[in-house]
Amino acid sequence: MNFVCQQCKQPLHLDASLVDLSPSAYDLVASSLPPSPSTSHARQTSGAEKLAQLPAPPSAKSAWRNSVQGSPSSPASSPTQRKQPQRAPMHPNESFVLLQDSVIRNIPSQLPPPVHAKKPSFSKGRATAAVQPAPPPEEPAHPNPSPLSHHLRSSLRLFNLLSSRTDLDHPLCAECTHILLGTLTRQLEETKKERDGYIAFEKEVKKEKEREGSGVNRLEAEAKIERLKEEERLAIEQLKAAEREHQQLEEELKNLEREEKVLGEEEAEFWRQHNAHLLKSAEQASQLAALRAAYAADSATLDKLERTNVYNDAFCIGHDGVFGTINGLRLGRVPGVPVEWAEINAAWGQTLLLLYTIARKLDFTFENYRLVPMGSFSRIEKTTGDKATYELYGSGDLHFGRLLHNRRFDFAMVAFLDCLKQLMDYVKSQDPQVDFPHQIVKDKIGEASVKQQFSQEEAWTRALRHVLLALKILLKWTTNGSNG
Image (cartoon, rainbow, N blue to C red; front, top):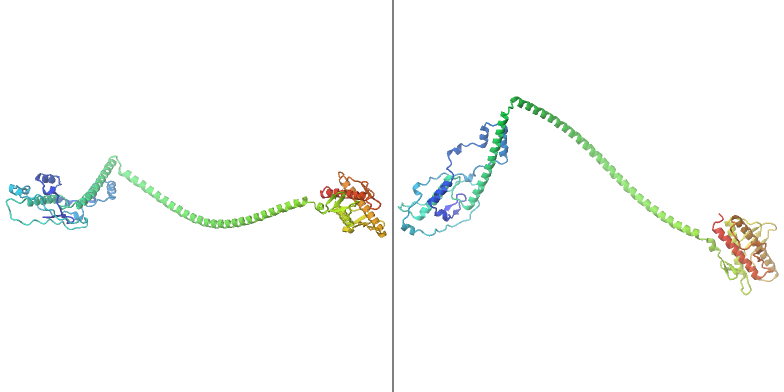
């Protein structure tokens, strides 16, 4: 006879301890099982009905509902775990069997193991009743049953006992047993929560009884109700005021949002103008920096030009041995050093031009004479008397006409010396500190005559050198700005 699990219907292989179960072990298992369920379970009422029947105040009942509301208790067993119809208990005379010695010798040492099949997962959704193990075929009654039938009957008796004392049919496989243990554990937790609810309910009932015993009467309760109603009315008024204030705040918020939008647009416009102003300011700063740089460069150039004496470059007065020179042209003649009259005439033209330039810069007008600088053919005109004209250039020819011309040349040099003396006197009147080393008296300057006729060439050359020195002093005083 093969046993199957009463839940998953898979074949079972019984443990050796169940096959050789002794009567004392059977009695021990039977004593540890709960009593058989009575018919009073059908008359049981639900927890809500029990709570409604209790004479307790509403607050205590609400405490009970709150304690059990979060974890509603599940039914004691799933539909698949409902009890099957009870089997008839075994007769007492089947608790043990006496075996003869000849029969004991014929008992096999080990039962053949049944074939195991794969156990599918336990399904709680099944609602079918457990199938009872197939009863053994009826055998003719023997005065001494075989050991195998005895073990089968003992196991069957044990399973019937377990099925009659519990809510499930037996036998069960190991997997279904583990599932059953998990279900029972959850039921235990729910029962503990239900117990906690009863404890809270009991505490609330005790509190209500204490309050009733403290003398709280109906009038106080009504006064409390009226006070609560007044508080409710005040709370409603406050709520309405808060709603009105909320609406006003929403309107103000909308106005503020509109103002914020306008201010945002104004800010964006301001930043655009600010950026444009910054760009323009940077451009103007760049132009200003360029102008300042140009101004600095021009100032430096101006300072350089102001320090530059153009007159010194235009009229460079120096000496070459015994000769005084102006712009490299020698003025005078000495024996042994022939100087061409063309060079001398050119030097006189530069000398007359220098005197004319100084007088014009000082805004000075000569008396009785007018200078006419014309290079190598310069002349001096007399503005009073016969208004004669004297040529300030000479020649080395010895014919009679040239002799008369050289005489006019001497008159021109004397007139030049007179004009030089007038200018020297004017400068001394402006600045007494100016000192001229050679004084001019008539046709002489420094005891040397400027006339070329009837004079030695060395004395004439020395007089011309003194003239150039006086002109150099005048030029320096004029260009230094000492004249104001």
